[in-house]
Length: 145
Length: 357
Image (cartoon, rainbow over all chains, first blue to last red; front, side, top):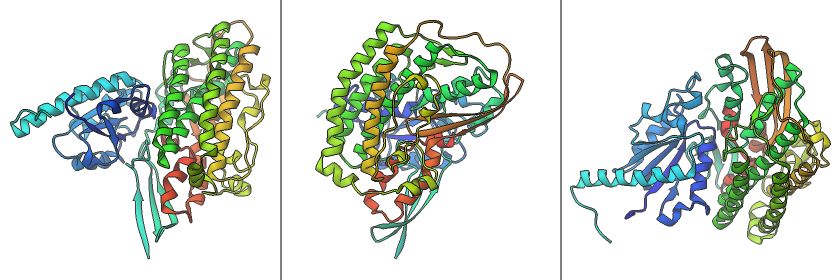
């Protein structure tokens, strides 16, 4: 990996299962911080937007707002089956579906709850996508350091 | 001069969204206005679409941290309605899994509170220890956070007696590490400065505002739903862990005490577990109404179940512990320093997805 992607995590309306697995991926057992992956709370510092859970009427605006604040290039990752399709809650009256109803989603990580291994795999794939987007924007290969 | 500072829904200290409007005068918070609803899914209404046996899966997904106890409470309620005699072995297995979830939930909370007062390596250590408990859970149920092992009429998987004794022995070893961890939380000078005397809630206030669980027990009220003897708790010897001070430090101490209590309960289960079947065949449909009350890591959860003799329940109502703990949280936050807000929010162990369902 050439870059250290910073992540911003937002919980749409998940059951918490995927949220704690996202946090678990950052802690010593899986420890993605050794690759420079940091969970930041500030959208303006983030490269990857990680959403768990589905979208409802109230958090629609929040998700859109965080997405708009992130600098380009950015990659959006939907983690967990609720964020992919709505999952077990898709029939609930207050669930509109995955975040792809509001913002463009680049990557889907299924699972209930998504395991830390698959979340890490998703982040690595997201980094490739991010690199592609950057190249497309600037027209330059990445700077070797 | 008064200023309003919005806190959340997206905030570094919060894994889940809750929005608070903090009204501050200089550095002092004079009023707090909460607004919830960011994770509302409306899953209580799903009982009309899913049949009562299938709904166990939905009940488990009310919350991913205390998922097993949610599933168990739902099963307990429906079993009481249908007058099903669950085999005693299943009761003991349920107790073991409940206590494992309590240990992992409390370790998770210890990590989050450490992160809230800025002690990041302590956060990492708590979560490192938590992973070991998750390994036991994964080995016995197949899932890390969502177990899927409880069903109406019993449990899906058995744990052999030998394995159970091994788990108890392993937890005894881990308890040494929990002790070291607990020592930092309870004796470290810097940690004490952030917790001692912060957010004091008196016993009468805690009762009057309807707080539950460790929050209530830390204010000196020994209320624990496990004393109602659901599952196998009737055959287990334990007493609620309490503290008198009612501040953040006391709440931390109660939760650390409960980790050791859970280790002890699992040890007793491993010795007392009877043989026999782990499930019973379910026939018929539920009818009537029932209140199921159990103790979650965060406190008392109430399931109101109303059935009308069809395969779908008529009404399900869940009162979760965090919802009960929000009024006391607002009480302790009024008059606090702005810098203490993250600690005070976490000290109730908020689980917003439970609260809003």
